Image (tube, rainbow, N blue to C red; front, side, top):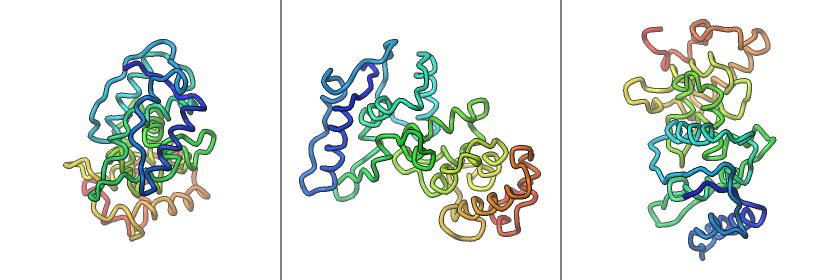
Length: 241
């Protein structure tokens, strides 16, 4: 299918559909919105997009980076209609049926990006991981803590760290977060990394805020940052450190 963007009417139709999913009479998937000239418009140059099954946020971001980067589109991160279209195109993956046969779309920012609001933009299920990937495109593996989870369930580590621009764009911080919270063998979040416990991602965000008052975090090496973390992080600290 040719990549397109939703116009104002298309976004309104998408919002109406999402709202219906929270009622007892959910509307059927509005596939017509994707290609109808009344609700969407073509991208220039033309790009063919595939329905792929993504194992995690990293895989989705890598594919979208290749797709959009090769096309040479300008300022795609700010293209509200494009990301709304992509979210609808991959809707089945982003909003799978739960055990009761229902879909729970969650907040609107997951589907239509909050352009200009960094504290909400990261919640978009596709634009969020894409922006993180782009920030670390020379070494995306260091941001695996924010990219290893399902595209439909980003998880608490993403929620705690991705909303802070000074955290998500910092190479050393991302490397430390991945070393702490991603199992090197399974490439999945370690048990206990989410939540409010000692050494959790929530605590890392708090500690980094304290460090930021004393140090220039952008000047620190990952090894140095890992070494000065309090003892509560020992349970997650990699043994080779």
